[in-house]
Length: 157
Length: 167
Figure 1 (cartoon, rainbow over the protein chains, first blue to last red):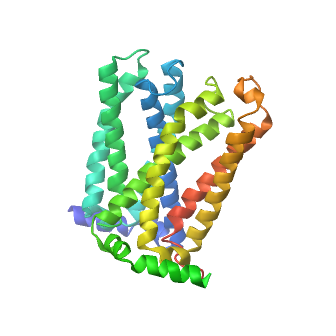
Figure 2 (cartoon, each protein chain N blue to C red):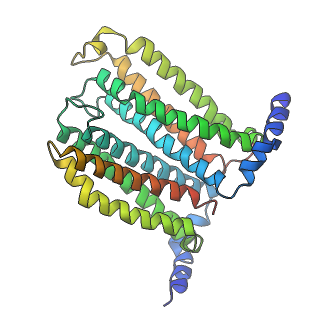
Figure 3 (cartoon, one colour):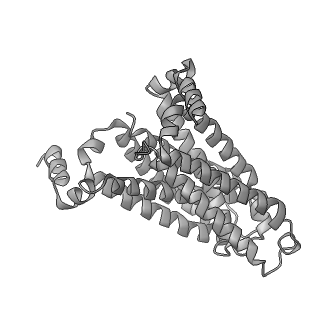
């Protein structure tokens, strides 16, 4: 089966029809969940990042804030991934061939790798090396904010 | 209302308005800046609201959360307002056509008033300033109001293209 056939099959599936053939506000609802999830994800990552580099809450133990905010990161990621997947299933051909969407997915992949290899390690340490901490926070936030930027461009490109 | 609408049409038809609306990359990039500024400003406010509701970072005093996040909240808002202003410039009349945009502006005014009342009245009270273990319930109420209002602002903003007119 070619990619195009897979996308066609997906677009004709019962789930895709259920999402796209109902009221167009269902699609708007998914978009809202996607934005709110993204806001939770980015703001929590920013909070952890500010703490790690010592720009906020210097006198609080790092692991406390990181643990609590990480929960919100997961919630944000779950909401964006779920709503995003449903949006993709509804109109896969629209997204798959969109250059902004492809860029977003590559950046998303990069952001997840950076998160697992760098950011998580740094945030888990009680006193990470300042230079390493600053670099990993900067790279991670840059990656996630680029995902948001590329994502916003999908509708216009 | 009709004068306001005429003015909006003029803004939209101005050279800058047309240039933004017609440029291939400027418009989506400004939309992207609006989204990122929103994630920073509104996102950090929502986290602060969770603290006011005693659901998040309980061990960090409320005054510390407010003070330490303030520069980033303000920085994010500057990005949101400038990008939002530019987006409005390019589609002023279309925005007034959308009930979602009008609702967004109204909720934003209420969110702002709530923030001012919290900042200058509730947060100035002794139990907040001295970080008492049990804070007055007005603190949690202000957090709930802020959380709800800013969420409505974001929801209405995203609904603008889906609810283009009053009909």
